[in-house]
Image 1 (cartoon, helix red, strand yellow):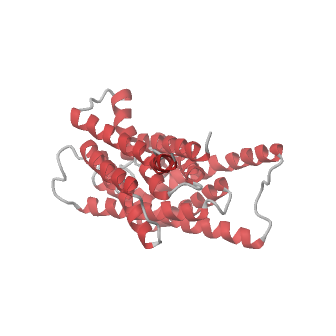
Image 2 (tube, rainbow, N blue to C red):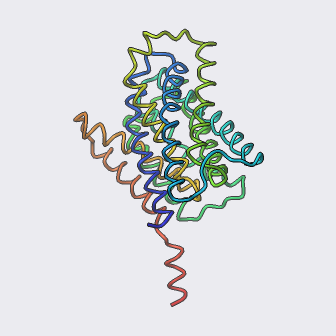
Image 3 (cartoon, helix red, strand yellow):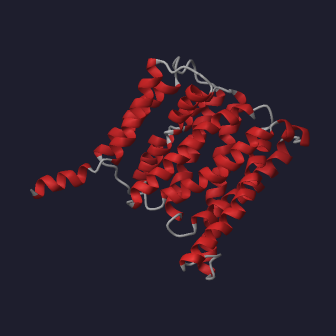
Length: 307
């Protein structure tokens, strides 16, 4: 299987996990946003420790390099990557959870968060990345699809939570681009572990400063915290780091915006929620945008010219 195809499939699985996690985040919105984030992040750290050991054992068996970097420069690169990616992830995740806590509409949260699908290539222009006409067309189709899927009654007025969720999309854009920069340079599983240690420490500090977390609160929200910690954080973000390796970040963001589609489909299949014609059209457009972004049109044009 080609590396690009394998990475794209990993990101699709990541989008599926993130899409179904929106329901868990909404269910946990009764507790403080920082407390919820701290709980899921420490749980992710506990999941990633044996995951890292398993990956090391597999690499050792295959005769490949494994373990923490031995060179000081490599260790510093890994630590820098963990701090930068972790801090951006903390800020983005906190903004998302605060926005959902203020307004538990998962549809609007899904749409505004997924706006990183446009922001990543826009910010990429400032870094010298030039998107093709094919990619920009995919972005436009995806945004129209997201609007049809998530915004059933239009925006209905811009609220404080909307600005917070839009800032979340901006921060996720930076996080995606930082992963794109660091993932080819470091071990993906170790980056994921360090990233969540940073998120866990920063969110715990914020919870102690701005909230009054209690054990009873964590007990009452154990299931949503567990789902988000084990799957969305532990598995999902590891898949993101491994899947984004050597993949155009604009295409990566486009694939990951499928989380909105999986959120809607999960509600339809598991919770017997109906999908309207408008929502179905939105799902179809987002899938079409992702497929369009993956088509090797440049190669096909090259073949025709060669013929």
